Image 1: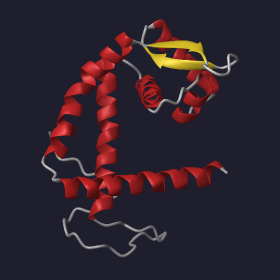
Image 2: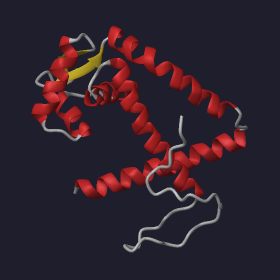
Image 3: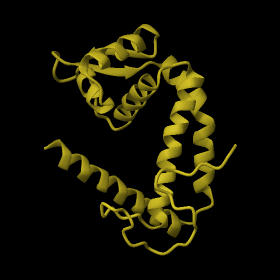
Amino acid sequence: MAQHQSFGAAPDSDSGPREPASPHGAPTGDELSRALREVLTLTQLARAVLAERLGMPLTNVEAVEHVIMARGAGEPIGPVELSRRLGVTSAAGTQSVNRLVSEGHMTRGPHPSDRRRQVLDVTDSGLTHVMGELAPLLGLLHEASATLDETERAAAKRYLENVSGAYRTYLAQNAE
């Protein structure tokens, strides 16, 4: 497979911080931000491949991912919140949910504390279907971190938490 250069990645490999080079004043970033952009680009490409392998539209794969993540966080997610997270209209979100429910990948049920609302969940067969295709990638990601010692793991974790915080701040600023 050909090497992929992500959007904004510099072709050279020096590791020093860079001065802003954009005519709009946007920083080009250091080697960590360039590596992160590469990971984000490759993540999007991998999602497209996953969707193709699953025989599902990308939006449906992303919907299943959001529901799985919400389940893992112990935060029930309904159709309205799912549509918001997908960045689609409620009608388009409902269409995705209806398709996923009819295909047996997802269920709708009453919200545990507000019976007027619905909660989505991924069925066991839906989870098995998605994880069957995703497991090889997850194994490769596990291998990628397996060689890190505790100090490196702590630094990587701190960096990723800082990146998550930056995204949350950006999203909060744009939600107002």
